[in-house]
Length: 112
Image (cartoon, rainbow, N blue to C red; front, side, top):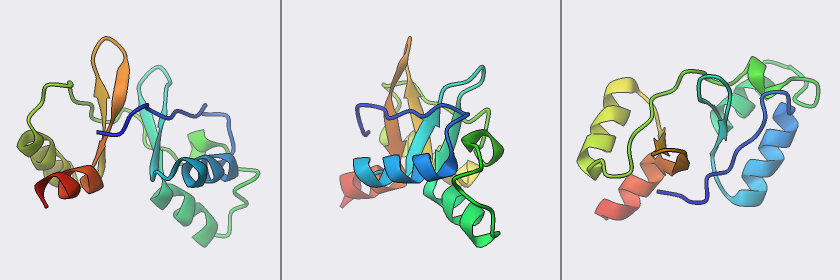
C-alpha cells in the first residue's frame, strides 16, 4: 500500500490533479467527499483525449465516486480478487480514517 494517502478536492482542476500525480509519482488521488471518490491518470488522459480543457474541468466531472474501499488487514489475495472482480486498479485503504491506497502495481511488486 502507498502511504501517505494523497488527496485532492473535487473542485480542483483536472490539470491540478495531473500535476499532483506527476509530482507524487502516483496514478490515483483520493477525492474525499460525502462518498469517497477517486481520480486516476486514466481519467486525466480521457479528459485530454476528448478535447476537454483540463485546466477548466473540475475533478468532480471526471472522478469515480462511491468507490470500493478495504480495511488495512485485508489479505493481498483478497485485494487482488476485488480489483479483478470490479475491473479496477486502485483501492483506498480505510480504517477509522483514510490510511493509504493499494494499487495493482503494489500487488505486482509484492508477488514478484
